[in-house]
Every structure is written in structure tokens, then in C-alpha cells.
Length: 184
Image (tube, helix red, strand yellow):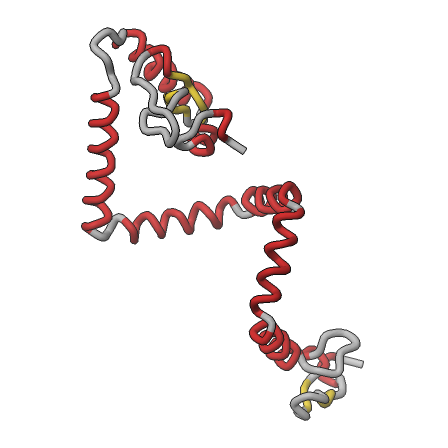
């Protein structure tokens, strides 16, 4: 039997006659009716569903994290395109640009205040040059990071050569404003 010759099926929920392609295999409800039923059921039990999902995520942290990482790898282009559009829109707003400049200024000020007079600036510059060389030679972005963050939550470090390390941009973003021991 050809596709155009297939018999129409009557949905037992909405009582409308629809082509076979509008039904899941073995279902007596059409796809729109099944979808609407699912939405109504979710709305009626929204809190219970949220609690169930939260419990699953907390009981399966590694599995969920692996799934998220796999999705991010498979959809890297999609994520990148979204981030480009977001940044373009976000930084088109003058108050957002001003806020970013204010935050950068505060960071530079904190770094300046955390740099003691006895710090070896040449040794510190070597870290920044090495990070730049690594970025250029490998094609992967590298950052100079403070082992003990300058503006840490529990402890504040100094901006000296003894408190600097080179990390990949990904590791540095993951570390954020914490000590390595605080990362879970």
C-alpha cells in the first residue's frame, strides 16, 4: 500500500480522523493529544517531577556530569554560536560594558594593592611571557593564575612570582576564585 493510500485512523481522544503518520506506533491517541496530555500531567505534578529530577541528579552526579560533557562536545558549534549571539547582544548594552570595565578596574586595583614592593617583577613577567608562548605554540589558550587567589573567599594571596602558575584557560575557568583544594 502506498503512503497516500494508507487509511486514516481516528484518535480516541480528540475523535478526529488523521493519517497514520500522526500516531506513534501502537498508540490510539494522535501525537498532538499525547503531547498535550504529557504537558497537563507535568503541570499537575510539577513540584513532584522537579523533586524526582533533583533526587536523580544528586544520586547520579557523575553520570549526569558525563552526560552534560558529552552533550557539550557533540554540540560545540551550537554552544559557540549561542555564546557569540549572547555576547554581541550583552555588550551592546552600555551599562553592561560599563560594568565590565568597572570590574576590570577593581581587579587591577586589587592586584596592584596585593603586589608588595619586594616582588620580583621580572620573574612575574616571565610567567606571562611563557603563557603567551604556550598559547601561540599549542593553539590552546593558557592563563597565568594565582595559586592562592588575590580575592579569595577564605584567604587572600599576594601578586608575587611565588603565587603564580600557568594553567589552561579551561582549568583556570574551572578553578575560578578558589584554591585547588576547594574544587570538587
